[in-house]
Image (cartoon, rainbow, N blue to C red; front, side, top):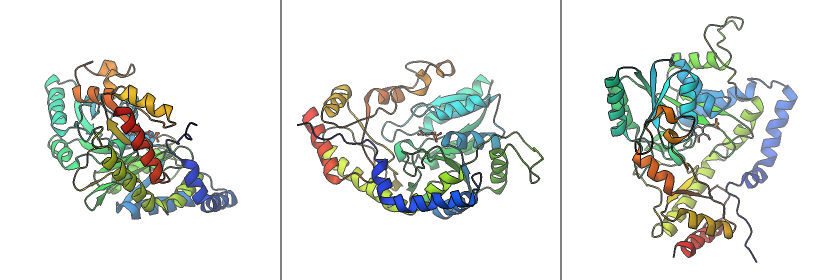
Length: 376
Ligand SMILES: Cc1ncc(COP(=O)(O)O)c(C=O)c1O
């Protein structure tokens, strides 16, 4: 008999544990009816400030809108170059283009899968030499939950006066040494998409910054650019608010978040141990704490492995099968196949395995055994 199918991310298991707390939080919102920027949004923002130690947290409508609003607050638009890793999610390129700026794709480090600061430096140089665009910002993406090398990035960005906008959609809860994600860059955008380490029950996100003036601009942009008097539209804005109900759900989930992060780490360690002789396991960088949004391995025999695991009820995902510079919507902003070799190589070999805080260790062991059988 075929073993039961394993969920890739099990949101139901988490809900069973937190059902009472989440329902009580939602019931409170239904009672007060302040559905837009209600008290739970303020309470969540205060909790995120406590969690990160940053001065400001702004709840917004999604991780994508967090990136968009953060770029809008810097006045980034036509003529600006926004640097980003080619191996990543579409949102970074999409927000730059939506504002009339140009995405410039940068290669990633082969082990960490994060933006390569040396390649960033080279590509900034190439943009300056071409003379058509002004380098304005870099968006490092903490891929799969591992924080990027912010010291090296800041070193390059600082020399060229670029804003560093961290895309921490996958890494919220991680950190470097004692510094949590949220304080690794001047501005951090994160996502509360349901399957993220801290996820809500719909779309949501947050922007975190230590800068008072930036925070004030971003708060205004979040509500149509309204000034202190709400009838004054003082700058171009959007409707980018986090729903009160989503904030209420996040408050209930934040109570167990630290425990969930520890459970993810312990499963990742089990995977590392069981898989290290079979495939390339994720990089462990001393001092860097990964939030383990995703656990990804590299193998030359990906299609074979994927099929074998599917046959045993084990789902896998490919994040990301195509780097951004080869995506139809973005290819005209890149230099085609061969221009970002590390990103291209990773896209051909990457495979993500199930991981979530409610996965039993014996399920992880079953997955390790299945990988060993398929590749043995
Ligand atoms: C790296 C990265 N950036 C940005 C986003 C966008 O977040 P959202 O789906 O909340 O808009 C995601 C979410 O999938 C992501 O993984």
